[in-house]
Length: 164
Image (tube, rainbow, N blue to C red):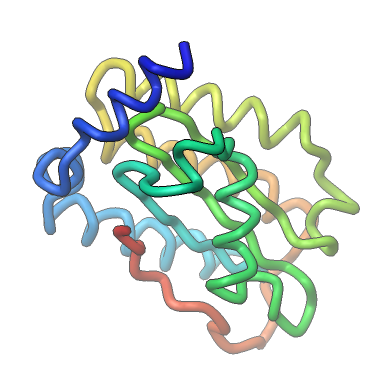
């Protein structure tokens, strides 16, 4: 299985990422995040990465570990109310991870985020990448609206998806 994973990662190209997430899809995802954040006080970031390379790949870095690493690198944790949420897709593995800051995690447990991840992964298996991400943003919105009502805070994190 490790060899198969390495092969998938080595064969996943930036072109595949671009085909799965063309500019129009990235624009639609950005609009969905912006609309979602208008309804709650959470801060959502979406990151898609085609594949791992180098030592992280050969050491078997998990999608969860990579998501946590990006959560820190992109400073999703650095919001005033600890209300940042990262949705991460590792395309080569078709794996989705959601990392919630402590303010969100205290109210919405990992089990709920796992359900959202599995729904997104089901859409990705059907090559519905844009719909899968937008569905994930809408599912996150449903949770965040309940626990983080709209306030007058400024948008602390960019809404534009990150493509690595």
